[in-house]
Image (cartoon, rainbow over all chains, first blue to last red; front, side):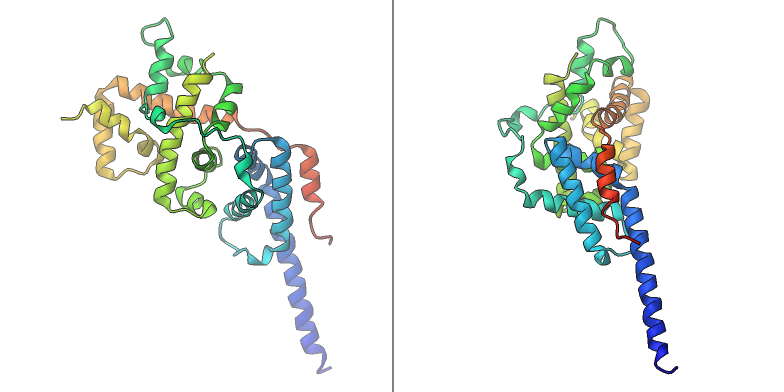
Length: 198
Length: 75
């Protein structure tokens, strides 16, 4: 009987590990909708986004032991995803560098001012001003933001990650997240003003 | 002397992100309380962020969902 003690402990350990693994996989799968939504806007096409998400889950399930329980699993998955995206040579993506940043220095009120000026009423409410933007062209306006800026917009404004999480996911300082975010949103608004007005 | 509306415009993004100091928030708030022009642009920005988030949100296909579920370790 003396030999059975370690065996029982081993069995218990293995059972626990199996349970932990099942739990990890379930939690990761519950986040897949959110992971996909972010992925879809980080890359140019649905096919790329689907491949990327699938590869992310394959890698995550292989390296699940590297995840620290209690930390942000969604951010961990997105970190894998952005690394895979970089490995895939993301530079081929649709990111027209012709957007001169000098032309994007319009202030933060620029879009509103432009939309409001096109309405006949003196003092329209914000909702009516917003309706001047076509939903479909918002996708294009975002896709046309240069990717360094777009990545932070997608993570923070679409994925609702904190600055700190976005910094970790992209492996850049928080200050860079903030400056790219602020500038990126202005570029997005400039694109919206140029392209998305109904 | 800077225009207070320009200053308020410059504070809009960090204000809405909640990343201003208490003093800066108070400064912006004092201006917004009396300036409907800026207040309206702040409200628009808030609505715009939501509008963009909804507009670019594309749900995952059921096929991909199934493929991901199939990656689980068999019990």
